[in-house]
Image (tube, rainbow, N blue to C red; front, side, top):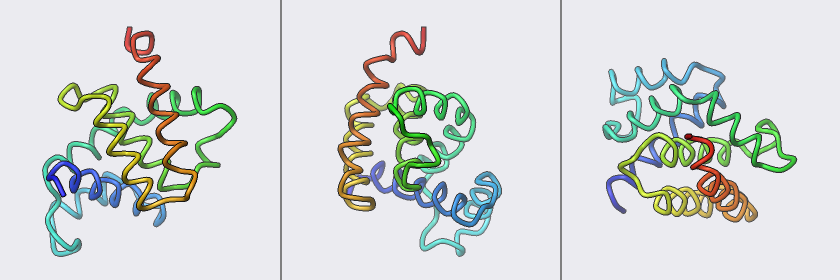
Length: 139
């Protein structure tokens, strides 16, 4: 498994755990960075970058996810999908180091292994729509 793939999975773990435990993701991230013993292994820097990026742009990412999800509110989405879409949305819109197709493929692969049977196509479709609308979103 590639280093960035592992980092995405670890970022997903932090975002998902924070939501499930109803704790502030910033606090949980700080705990994981300060005391790597609370996690299986230390968080890769890219995982930290993802979580911080998602949190910095969460309102805008969530707005776009709700706008383009056609009848699905964020609350109605499975929690894993919601976190994956936020990560993919951040990589597509705010991280120029990651090609859009890679961001989508990585999110779909994680959805395939960690979420529902319908999740890969849902994640793929929604992130592809954001890529399609990217020129107007970021203009």
